[in-house]
Length: 418
Image (cartoon, rainbow, N blue to C red; front, side):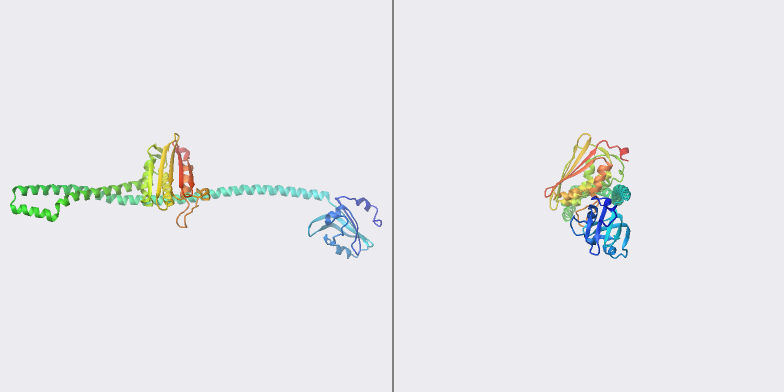
Protein backbone atom coordinates (compact mmCIF):
# COMPACT_ATOMS: atom_id res chain seq x y z
CA UNK A 1 0.00 0.00 0.00
CA UNK A 2 2.94 2.36 0.60
CA UNK A 3 3.57 2.46 -3.14
CA UNK A 4 0.10 3.78 -3.95
CA UNK A 5 -1.22 7.28 -3.88
CA UNK A 6 -1.77 8.61 -0.38
CA UNK A 7 -5.43 9.20 -1.27
CA UNK A 8 -5.99 5.44 -1.49
CA UNK A 9 -5.73 5.23 2.26
CA UNK A 10 -8.83 7.41 2.49
CA UNK A 11 -10.74 4.90 0.38
CA UNK A 12 -9.44 1.87 2.21
CA UNK A 13 -12.12 1.88 4.85
CA UNK A 14 -13.63 -1.25 6.20
CA UNK A 15 -17.05 -0.44 4.76
CA UNK A 16 -19.48 -2.01 2.32
CA UNK A 17 -20.02 1.02 0.07
CA UNK A 18 -16.37 0.99 -1.09
CA UNK A 19 -14.53 -1.85 -2.79
CA UNK A 20 -10.72 -1.82 -2.31
CA UNK A 21 -8.21 -4.53 -3.10
CA UNK A 22 -4.46 -4.74 -3.86
CA UNK A 23 -2.99 -7.79 -5.61
CA UNK A 24 0.61 -8.87 -6.40
CA UNK A 25 1.48 -9.82 -9.93
CA UNK A 26 1.82 -12.25 -11.44
CA UNK A 27 0.93 -14.53 -8.45
CA UNK A 28 -2.42 -12.86 -7.73
CA UNK A 29 -1.68 -12.89 -4.00
CA UNK A 30 -4.02 -10.64 -2.08
CA UNK A 31 -2.07 -7.88 -0.30
CA UNK A 32 -5.04 -5.98 1.04
CA UNK A 33 -8.83 -6.13 0.86
CA UNK A 34 -11.63 -4.37 2.65
CA UNK A 35 -15.04 -5.78 3.64
CA UNK A 36 -16.62 -4.52 0.42
CA UNK A 37 -14.35 -6.59 -1.80
CA UNK A 38 -14.58 -9.64 0.44
CA UNK A 39 -18.36 -9.41 0.25
CA UNK A 40 -18.36 -9.28 -3.55
CA UNK A 41 -15.91 -12.21 -3.78
CA UNK A 42 -17.85 -14.21 -1.16
CA UNK A 43 -14.76 -14.78 1.01
CA UNK A 44 -13.91 -14.45 4.70
CA UNK A 45 -10.97 -12.45 6.00
CA UNK A 46 -7.78 -14.49 5.72
CA UNK A 47 -9.06 -16.65 2.86
CA UNK A 48 -7.19 -16.94 -0.41
CA UNK A 49 -8.82 -14.76 -3.04
CA UNK A 50 -11.07 -16.69 -5.45
CA UNK A 51 -9.75 -15.03 -8.60
CA UNK A 52 -12.23 -16.90 -10.76
CA UNK A 53 -14.97 -14.70 -9.27
CA UNK A 54 -13.67 -11.72 -11.24
CA UNK A 55 -16.38 -11.90 -13.91
CA UNK A 56 -15.89 -8.67 -15.90
CA UNK A 57 -13.07 -8.11 -16.47
CA UNK A 58 -11.53 -11.51 -15.71
CA UNK A 59 -8.44 -11.43 -13.48
CA UNK A 60 -6.44 -13.15 -16.21
CA UNK A 61 -7.33 -10.28 -18.52
CA UNK A 62 -5.98 -7.81 -15.96
CA UNK A 63 -2.78 -9.82 -15.57
CA UNK A 64 -2.23 -9.83 -19.33
CA UNK A 65 -2.46 -6.05 -19.66
CA UNK A 66 0.49 -4.34 -21.41
CA UNK A 67 0.16 -1.25 -19.24
CA UNK A 68 3.01 -1.02 -16.73
CA UNK A 69 1.97 2.13 -14.97
CA UNK A 70 -1.51 3.58 -15.01
CA UNK A 71 -5.16 2.69 -15.45
CA UNK A 72 -5.89 -0.57 -17.21
CA UNK A 73 -9.73 -0.68 -16.80
CA UNK A 74 -12.56 1.71 -15.97
CA UNK A 75 -16.30 1.08 -15.86
CA UNK A 76 -18.56 -1.51 -14.30
CA UNK A 77 -16.73 -4.19 -12.32
CA UNK A 78 -18.74 -7.43 -12.03
CA UNK A 79 -18.03 -10.14 -9.47
CA UNK A 80 -19.68 -13.53 -8.93
CA UNK A 81 -19.54 -17.20 -9.64
CA UNK A 82 -20.72 -20.57 -8.35
CA UNK A 83 -22.57 -20.03 -5.07
CA UNK A 84 -22.05 -16.25 -5.22
CA UNK A 85 -24.59 -13.97 -6.93
CA UNK A 86 -23.31 -11.61 -9.61
CA UNK A 87 -23.02 -7.99 -8.44
CA UNK A 88 -21.63 -4.90 -10.17
CA UNK A 89 -20.01 -1.71 -8.92
CA UNK A 90 -18.62 1.30 -10.77
CA UNK A 91 -14.82 1.63 -10.47
CA UNK A 92 -11.41 1.19 -12.04
CA UNK A 93 -8.24 -0.93 -11.95
CA UNK A 94 -4.73 0.61 -11.97
CA UNK A 95 -1.28 -1.00 -12.19
CA UNK A 96 1.96 0.18 -10.65
CA UNK A 97 4.83 -2.15 -11.17
CA UNK A 98 4.08 -5.60 -9.84
CA UNK A 99 0.82 -4.66 -8.11
CA UNK A 100 -2.69 -3.76 -9.25
CA UNK A 101 -5.25 -1.77 -7.35
CA UNK A 102 -8.96 -2.54 -7.63
CA UNK A 103 -11.03 0.40 -6.49
CA UNK A 104 -14.79 0.83 -6.77
CA UNK A 105 -17.90 2.07 -5.06
CA UNK A 106 -21.59 1.35 -5.19
CA UNK A 107 -23.29 4.04 -7.27
CA UNK A 108 -25.92 5.28 -4.81
CA UNK A 109 -27.75 7.29 -7.42
CA UNK A 110 -27.76 4.34 -9.78
CA UNK A 111 -28.98 2.07 -7.00
CA UNK A 112 -31.74 4.49 -6.16
CA UNK A 113 -32.71 4.65 -9.81
CA UNK A 114 -32.73 0.86 -10.03
CA UNK A 115 -34.74 0.66 -6.81
CA UNK A 116 -37.24 3.12 -8.22
CA UNK A 117 -37.50 1.07 -11.37
CA UNK A 118 -37.92 -2.10 -9.35
CA UNK A 119 -40.57 -0.43 -7.21
CA UNK A 120 -42.39 0.76 -10.32
CA UNK A 121 -42.12 -2.71 -11.86
CA UNK A 122 -43.43 -4.28 -8.67
CA UNK A 123 -46.36 -1.88 -8.81
CA UNK A 124 -47.03 -2.81 -12.40
CA UNK A 125 -46.78 -6.50 -11.54
CA UNK A 126 -49.24 -6.01 -8.67
CA UNK A 127 -51.64 -4.18 -10.98
CA UNK A 128 -51.25 -6.89 -13.61
CA UNK A 129 -51.88 -9.58 -11.00
CA UNK A 130 -54.98 -7.73 -9.82
CA UNK A 131 -56.18 -7.29 -13.40
CA UNK A 132 -55.43 -10.94 -14.11
CA UNK A 133 -57.44 -11.99 -11.06
CA UNK A 134 -60.35 -9.79 -12.19
CA UNK A 135 -60.18 -11.20 -15.72
CA UNK A 136 -59.99 -14.74 -14.36
CA UNK A 137 -63.05 -14.07 -12.21
CA UNK A 138 -64.85 -12.58 -15.21
CA UNK A 139 -63.87 -15.54 -17.37
CA UNK A 140 -65.10 -17.98 -14.74
CA UNK A 141 -68.39 -16.09 -14.50
CA UNK A 142 -68.67 -16.10 -18.30
CA UNK A 143 -67.90 -19.82 -18.39
CA UNK A 144 -70.60 -20.47 -15.79
CA UNK A 145 -73.06 -18.41 -17.81
CA UNK A 146 -72.11 -20.31 -20.97
CA UNK A 147 -72.61 -23.61 -19.20
CA UNK A 148 -75.99 -22.50 -17.90
CA UNK A 149 -76.95 -21.19 -21.33
CA UNK A 150 -75.88 -24.44 -22.94
CA UNK A 151 -77.79 -26.37 -20.31
CA UNK A 152 -80.94 -24.31 -20.81
CA UNK A 153 -80.65 -24.57 -24.59
CA UNK A 154 -80.41 -28.34 -24.33
CA UNK A 155 -83.31 -28.33 -21.89
CA UNK A 156 -85.42 -26.08 -24.11
CA UNK A 157 -84.66 -28.26 -27.12
CA UNK A 158 -85.59 -31.42 -25.23
CA UNK A 159 -88.79 -29.88 -23.83
CA UNK A 160 -89.77 -28.55 -27.25
CA UNK A 161 -89.21 -31.95 -28.81
CA UNK A 162 -91.06 -33.61 -25.96
CA UNK A 163 -93.96 -31.21 -26.31
CA UNK A 164 -94.24 -31.87 -30.02
CA UNK A 165 -94.07 -35.63 -29.53
CA UNK A 166 -96.62 -35.56 -26.71
CA UNK A 167 -98.95 -33.32 -28.69
CA UNK A 168 -98.72 -35.63 -31.69
CA UNK A 169 -99.16 -38.81 -29.65
CA UNK A 170 -102.05 -37.36 -27.66
CA UNK A 171 -103.80 -36.22 -30.83
CA UNK A 172 -103.21 -39.45 -32.73
CA UNK A 173 -104.37 -41.60 -29.82
CA UNK A 174 -107.26 -39.43 -28.69
CA UNK A 175 -109.13 -39.49 -32.00
CA UNK A 176 -109.29 -43.29 -32.50
CA UNK A 177 -109.90 -43.81 -28.78
CA UNK A 178 -112.91 -41.50 -28.89
CA UNK A 179 -114.12 -43.25 -32.06
CA UNK A 180 -113.75 -46.75 -30.60
CA UNK A 181 -115.22 -45.69 -27.26
CA UNK A 182 -118.30 -44.29 -28.98
CA UNK A 183 -118.66 -47.45 -31.05
CA UNK A 184 -118.37 -49.65 -27.97
CA UNK A 185 -121.20 -47.80 -26.27
CA UNK A 186 -123.27 -48.19 -29.45
CA UNK A 187 -122.30 -51.86 -29.63
CA UNK A 188 -123.36 -52.38 -26.02
CA UNK A 189 -126.72 -50.77 -26.75
CA UNK A 190 -127.11 -52.87 -29.90
CA UNK A 191 -126.15 -56.07 -28.06
CA UNK A 192 -128.67 -55.34 -25.36
CA UNK A 193 -131.33 -54.73 -28.03
CA UNK A 194 -130.42 -58.00 -29.79
CA UNK A 195 -130.55 -59.90 -26.51
CA UNK A 196 -133.93 -58.36 -25.60
CA UNK A 197 -135.32 -59.17 -29.04
CA UNK A 198 -134.04 -62.73 -28.87
CA UNK A 199 -135.46 -63.15 -25.39
CA UNK A 200 -138.88 -61.92 -26.61
CA UNK A 201 -138.65 -64.24 -29.61
CA UNK A 202 -137.88 -67.19 -27.35
CA UNK A 203 -140.80 -66.28 -25.10
CA UNK A 204 -143.11 -66.08 -28.14
CA UNK A 205 -142.00 -69.47 -29.49
CA UNK A 206 -142.27 -71.00 -26.02
CA UNK A 207 -145.85 -69.71 -25.69
CA UNK A 208 -147.25 -70.10 -29.21
CA UNK A 209 -144.79 -72.19 -31.19
CA UNK A 210 -144.94 -75.87 -32.13
CA UNK A 211 -143.03 -78.58 -30.37
CA UNK A 212 -140.58 -78.67 -33.27
CA UNK A 213 -139.98 -74.91 -33.01
CA UNK A 214 -139.44 -75.13 -29.27
CA UNK A 215 -137.01 -78.04 -29.74
CA UNK A 216 -135.12 -76.11 -32.42
CA UNK A 217 -134.99 -73.06 -30.14
CA UNK A 218 -133.37 -75.10 -27.36
CA UNK A 219 -130.94 -76.61 -29.88
CA UNK A 220 -129.91 -73.18 -31.19
CA UNK A 221 -129.35 -71.82 -27.62
CA UNK A 222 -127.14 -74.82 -26.81
CA UNK A 223 -125.20 -74.73 -30.08
CA UNK A 224 -124.47 -70.99 -29.72
CA UNK A 225 -123.88 -71.34 -25.95
CA UNK A 226 -126.07 -68.32 -25.40
CA UNK A 227 -126.28 -68.92 -21.66
CA UNK A 228 -122.52 -68.13 -21.53
CA UNK A 229 -122.32 -65.72 -24.45
CA UNK A 230 -124.83 -63.12 -23.24
CA UNK A 231 -123.22 -62.58 -19.74
CA UNK A 232 -119.70 -62.80 -21.20
CA UNK A 233 -120.58 -60.19 -23.81
CA UNK A 234 -121.40 -57.77 -21.01
CA UNK A 235 -118.02 -58.48 -19.37
CA UNK A 236 -116.14 -58.08 -22.67
CA UNK A 237 -117.79 -54.77 -23.47
CA UNK A 238 -117.36 -53.50 -19.92
CA UNK A 239 -113.66 -54.46 -19.87
CA UNK A 240 -113.07 -52.86 -23.27
CA UNK A 241 -114.71 -49.63 -22.14
CA UNK A 242 -112.61 -49.62 -18.97
CA UNK A 243 -109.43 -50.25 -21.01
CA UNK A 244 -110.25 -47.33 -23.28
CA UNK A 245 -110.88 -45.17 -20.22
CA UNK A 246 -107.39 -46.10 -18.98
CA UNK A 247 -105.89 -45.18 -22.35
CA UNK A 248 -107.74 -41.88 -22.18
CA UNK A 249 -106.32 -41.21 -18.70
CA UNK A 250 -102.80 -41.95 -20.00
CA UNK A 251 -103.33 -39.42 -22.79
CA UNK A 252 -104.58 -36.89 -20.26
CA UNK A 253 -101.53 -37.61 -18.06
CA UNK A 254 -99.25 -37.03 -21.06
CA UNK A 255 -100.87 -33.68 -21.73
CA UNK A 256 -100.83 -32.81 -18.03
CA UNK A 257 -97.15 -33.71 -17.73
CA UNK A 258 -96.08 -31.63 -20.72
CA UNK A 259 -98.57 -28.87 -19.80
CA UNK A 260 -98.76 -27.86 -23.44
CA UNK A 261 -101.71 -25.63 -22.58
CA UNK A 262 -100.20 -24.52 -19.24
CA UNK A 263 -96.58 -23.68 -20.02
CA UNK A 264 -96.85 -20.23 -18.46
CA UNK A 265 -97.12 -19.03 -14.88
CA UNK A 266 -100.42 -20.18 -13.31
CA UNK A 267 -102.06 -21.73 -10.27
CA UNK A 268 -102.06 -25.53 -10.09
CA UNK A 269 -102.49 -28.46 -7.73
CA UNK A 270 -99.02 -29.97 -7.23
CA UNK A 271 -100.54 -33.28 -6.18
CA UNK A 272 -102.14 -33.59 -9.63
CA UNK A 273 -98.80 -32.76 -11.25
CA UNK A 274 -97.02 -35.47 -9.27
CA UNK A 275 -99.75 -38.02 -10.05
CA UNK A 276 -99.53 -37.34 -13.79
CA UNK A 277 -95.72 -37.50 -13.68
CA UNK A 278 -95.84 -40.84 -11.87
CA UNK A 279 -98.14 -42.19 -14.58
CA UNK A 280 -95.63 -41.21 -17.28
CA UNK A 281 -92.72 -42.63 -15.27
CA UNK A 282 -94.48 -45.96 -14.69
CA UNK A 283 -92.25 -47.85 -17.17
CA UNK A 284 -89.22 -46.93 -15.00
CA UNK A 285 -90.98 -47.86 -11.77
CA UNK A 286 -92.71 -51.02 -12.99
CA UNK A 287 -93.64 -53.46 -10.22
CA UNK A 288 -90.31 -53.28 -8.41
CA UNK A 289 -90.64 -49.77 -6.96
CA UNK A 290 -93.52 -49.23 -4.56
CA UNK A 291 -94.67 -45.61 -4.45
CA UNK A 292 -96.12 -44.17 -1.23
CA UNK A 293 -97.86 -40.80 -1.48
CA UNK A 294 -98.70 -38.37 1.29
CA UNK A 295 -99.88 -35.24 -0.54
CA UNK A 296 -103.35 -34.65 0.87
CA UNK A 297 -102.43 -31.41 2.70
CA UNK A 298 -101.00 -29.57 -0.31
CA UNK A 299 -102.73 -26.30 -1.27
CA UNK A 300 -102.79 -24.88 -4.78
CA UNK A 301 -99.90 -22.54 -5.64
CA UNK A 302 -98.84 -20.34 -8.53
CA UNK A 303 -95.83 -21.68 -10.43
CA UNK A 304 -94.53 -22.85 -13.79
CA UNK A 305 -96.20 -26.30 -14.01
CA UNK A 306 -94.28 -27.64 -17.00
CA UNK A 307 -90.93 -26.86 -15.36
CA UNK A 308 -91.93 -28.41 -12.02
CA UNK A 309 -93.10 -31.53 -13.83
CA UNK A 310 -89.61 -31.81 -15.33
CA UNK A 311 -88.11 -31.60 -11.82
CA UNK A 312 -90.50 -34.26 -10.51
CA UNK A 313 -89.73 -36.52 -13.46
CA UNK A 314 -85.97 -36.24 -12.91
CA UNK A 315 -86.25 -37.04 -9.20
CA UNK A 316 -88.62 -39.97 -9.76
CA UNK A 317 -86.53 -41.50 -12.56
CA UNK A 318 -83.30 -41.03 -10.59
CA UNK A 319 -84.87 -42.74 -7.58
CA UNK A 320 -86.06 -45.65 -9.74
CA UNK A 321 -82.59 -46.06 -11.24
CA UNK A 322 -80.96 -45.89 -7.80
CA UNK A 323 -83.08 -48.86 -6.66
CA UNK A 324 -81.41 -51.87 -8.25
CA UNK A 325 -83.89 -54.64 -7.43
CA UNK A 326 -86.90 -53.67 -5.34
CA UNK A 327 -87.53 -50.75 -3.04
CA UNK A 328 -89.74 -47.87 -2.07
CA UNK A 329 -90.14 -44.27 -3.18
CA UNK A 330 -92.04 -42.11 -0.72
CA UNK A 331 -93.26 -38.69 -1.85
CA UNK A 332 -94.47 -36.40 0.91
CA UNK A 333 -95.74 -32.84 0.88
CA UNK A 334 -96.90 -30.41 3.54
CA UNK A 335 -97.74 -26.78 4.14
CA UNK A 336 -95.37 -24.75 6.32
CA UNK A 337 -97.23 -21.47 6.22
CA UNK A 338 -95.33 -19.28 3.78
CA UNK A 339 -93.90 -22.18 1.83
CA UNK A 340 -94.63 -25.71 0.66
CA UNK A 341 -92.22 -28.57 1.30
CA UNK A 342 -91.89 -31.66 -0.91
CA UNK A 343 -89.74 -34.68 -0.09
CA UNK A 344 -88.69 -37.54 -2.36
CA UNK A 345 -87.25 -40.38 -0.25
CA UNK A 346 -85.91 -43.54 -1.89
CA UNK A 347 -84.37 -46.73 -0.56
CA UNK A 348 -81.73 -46.91 -3.29
CA UNK A 349 -77.97 -47.29 -3.07
CA UNK A 350 -77.30 -43.75 -1.81
CA UNK A 351 -74.44 -41.45 -2.78
CA UNK A 352 -70.89 -40.90 -1.54
CA UNK A 353 -69.72 -37.49 -0.24
CA UNK A 354 -67.64 -36.77 -3.36
CA UNK A 355 -70.71 -37.33 -5.56
CA UNK A 356 -72.82 -35.15 -3.27
CA UNK A 357 -70.38 -32.24 -3.73
CA UNK A 358 -70.97 -32.22 -7.51
CA UNK A 359 -74.63 -33.21 -7.46
CA UNK A 360 -76.02 -30.02 -9.01
CA UNK A 361 -73.03 -29.25 -11.29
CA UNK A 362 -74.04 -29.16 -14.97
CA UNK A 363 -72.91 -32.18 -17.04
CA UNK A 364 -71.72 -34.13 -13.97
CA UNK A 365 -73.02 -37.70 -14.05
CA UNK A 366 -72.12 -41.04 -12.51
CA UNK A 367 -73.87 -42.94 -15.29
CA UNK A 368 -71.96 -44.67 -18.11
CA UNK A 369 -71.22 -42.71 -21.27
CA UNK A 370 -74.35 -42.46 -23.35
CA UNK A 371 -76.67 -43.20 -20.42
CA UNK A 372 -76.91 -39.73 -18.91
CA UNK A 373 -76.25 -36.09 -19.77
CA UNK A 374 -75.68 -34.76 -16.25
CA UNK A 375 -78.38 -32.13 -16.81
CA UNK A 376 -81.29 -33.49 -14.78
CA UNK A 377 -80.37 -32.27 -11.30
CA UNK A 378 -78.63 -29.14 -12.58
CA UNK A 379 -81.86 -28.21 -14.37
CA UNK A 380 -83.87 -29.07 -11.27
CA UNK A 381 -81.68 -26.72 -9.23
CA UNK A 382 -82.06 -23.88 -11.73
CA UNK A 383 -85.82 -24.34 -12.02
CA UNK A 384 -86.40 -24.47 -8.26
CA UNK A 385 -83.86 -21.83 -7.16
CA UNK A 386 -83.73 -19.36 -10.07
CA UNK A 387 -87.25 -19.62 -11.49
CA UNK A 388 -89.25 -20.31 -8.31
CA UNK A 389 -87.02 -18.72 -5.62
CA UNK A 390 -87.12 -21.93 -3.61
CA UNK A 391 -84.53 -24.40 -2.40
CA UNK A 392 -83.53 -27.96 -3.26
CA UNK A 393 -81.21 -29.99 -1.04
CA UNK A 394 -80.08 -33.59 -0.89
CA UNK A 395 -79.17 -35.90 1.97
CA UNK A 396 -77.81 -39.36 1.31
CA UNK A 397 -76.18 -42.29 3.08
CA UNK A 398 -74.40 -44.93 0.97
CA UNK A 399 -76.34 -48.18 1.13
CA UNK A 400 -79.41 -46.60 2.75
CA UNK A 401 -80.93 -44.26 0.17
CA UNK A 402 -81.34 -40.58 -0.59
CA UNK A 403 -83.72 -37.76 0.31
CA UNK A 404 -84.35 -34.72 -1.87
CA UNK A 405 -86.16 -31.83 -0.21
CA UNK A 406 -87.79 -29.02 -2.18
CA UNK A 407 -89.26 -25.84 -0.74
CA UNK A 408 -91.46 -23.55 -2.82
CA UNK A 409 -92.78 -20.13 -1.76
CA UNK A 410 -96.56 -19.84 -1.77
CA UNK A 411 -96.44 -16.17 -2.74
CA UNK A 412 -94.24 -16.44 -5.84
CA UNK A 413 -94.63 -13.32 -7.96
CA UNK A 414 -94.51 -13.80 -11.72
CA UNK A 415 -93.23 -10.25 -12.30
CA UNK A 416 -90.36 -10.76 -9.87
CA UNK A 417 -89.29 -13.92 -11.68
CA UNK A 418 -89.54 -12.44 -15.14
